[in-house]
Amino acid sequence: MECGPVLPDSLVLDIFLHLPHDDVLRAGLTCIQWLAVSRDEFLWRELFYSYYRIPRLVPRHPASVSWYREFRRLFDSIPCVEVQTLREHTDQVLHLAFSHRGHRFSSCSKDCTVKLWDTERLDGNISMVHSSSMREFNWGYTQFSQFNTDDTLLLVSGVYLGPHHSSSGEIAVISLDNYTLLSRVRNKPYDVFGCWLNETHLISGNLHWIGNMTSCSVLWLNKAFQDVESENVNVVKRLFKIQNVNASTIRTVMVAHCRRHDNPDLLLDYEAQSQARRQKGQQEQQQHQPLLFDLGTSGSEEEDEGAERGEEARLPTAHSAQPSISGLEHVIQSCKTVGRTELAIETHVAKIMGRAHTKAPESSLNEPSESGEGEDKTYLLFTTGSLTYSPHQIGIKRIKPDQMTTCGPVLGEERSSDDFFDSLDHVIDIHGHIIGMGLSPDHRYLYVNSRAWPAGCVISDPMSPPPIAEEIDLHVIDLKSLREERRSLRAHRAFTPNDECFFIFLDVSKDFVASGAEDKHGYIWDRHYNICLARLAHDDVVNSVAFSPADQELLLSASDDSTIKVWRSPRMVRLAQAPTRPPRPRSLLPSWLSRNKNSTSASSVNGKP
Image 1 (cartoon, one colour):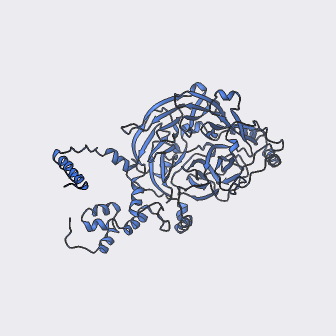
Image 2 (cartoon, rainbow, N blue to C red):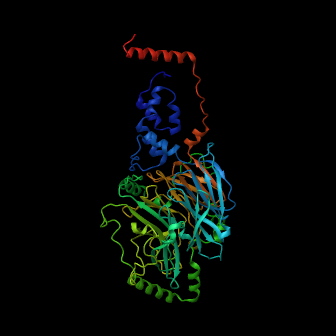
Image 3 (cartoon, rainbow, N blue to C red):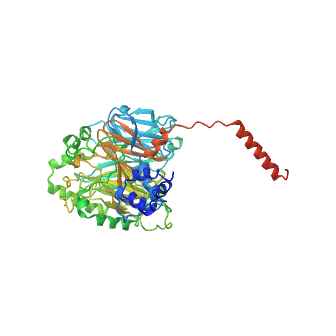
């Protein structure tokens, strides 16, 4: 429709700049002039920065084509609408993992089952297709699972049913063709978890104590199943043997395949980000107020800070019954019988022996190798430490092509007697307790959840690590440059102390990163703008989140409340609720006229009237 007296576009634009974005969209439906102004790029640039509270030095995402569409992407494509709650588990749900195609996902739980779910039903709902109980193998619970690259096998990691401080676990491999158990591998400590190296081989761990606070972690390469050829070739091979001091051990192994030619899915102007952070000031950084955008879908109001700090949230009952820091029973017993001086002497001697009997490290991971410049590289990533038992470092060890199979020398036959231990190729110190790690889809970036130590703290006793913050930091590490690029805003929280701190699984999609938290919420951030966009409400601790690799607008969250929640974006919910349009009936007269017109046209082309 046409308006009466027409206001100048500049005046309409100035009015729109003082309106919320939803009022601007509604005003654009008034007339043609207002519609044109309501799509002005300058207008949406201002609305974008003001609504999302992004520093103006941070540029628009390079892949974005307009400010309006970028605003709409962050508002409409976040999987923050709860569409389904899965209640088939009878105890805390600890981990979720999607298949690479996104057609299935698995869940692990304290009820000692691993369940498989179908995401491709025609009605859009998710349903369980299989459940396997691991009780018969003396497991206490299942804690982690991972699909191999061709989605034919499932790795399931669990914890043995044993003493209160038992650190033993096991890895099982299940065929997804007929759900049969193919193999079982010992895994110690259990929070090594295990992971796939390729389609047919997986990595497990073992731990040997060689002193009161000194140990040796051995990482093994295992063939996932035994076939006819296995009678003549090895099915297991030692990858690395690494010395641990000060009661630390290797945990949380994962494999990153870094490509020589990549187009990173995280496009950042780091200089602009750094300047923007400095401008925000130190006072705001100390307060760490999360940037939260309530899209009206969390279903609950933010709880009082006092309630979040309450005793019930601070000490989750089931997690307290099973401390996450494994392998401490040996050290705790030693500390009761051996003095602190003797333990310090042991650590000093262990470091001297380690330097004398550790294989020299490879050339710098940043430098090209002799075989060629910029080749594909495979890294083994894990948490470790050197100052205390709590994991505070990321260890990186390159896996060479000849180590990708169990064929060849075993049990260190190729190793000289002087090279008893393997050295780490690179170490990144996080200066805090690491409680979660996740890789970006292109394996270029490693995201790390940690709870920071106080600035300037000094660790004098390995068994008394510094107090850890309740706020969780999200670090971003570039695996190509092997440096920490930046730290995300603090939004999620945790309350358990060092010796009860448990793993919180995070996940990364092309545009977003999500994580659980102990404050009964999951969180979603935008990877480019570094802002928290949504909170996902549960009734208890959120242990794991997982994006569908086929559609990042589908997210799952698992909680101690024994449920799995399914979240979709507002855009996908609208599409699913929109009525399907019936096919338009064809009228005989227009159809006949159309055929007659086409016939006449064809005759003209052929030169006939």
